[in-house]
Image (cartoon, rainbow, N blue to C red):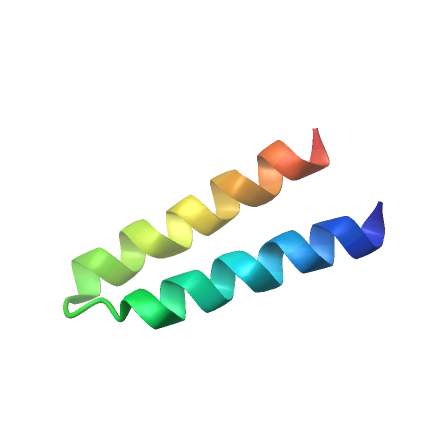
Length: 43
């Protein structure tokens, strides 16, 4: 299960990096979405 969590977070991070936000506000939203995705995986 730990491997799945790490893989999900890595994939999410890669996706966010590839999308390359242009504003600080956008980066904040992306970080929040990563946190929410991590919470869903843990549940």
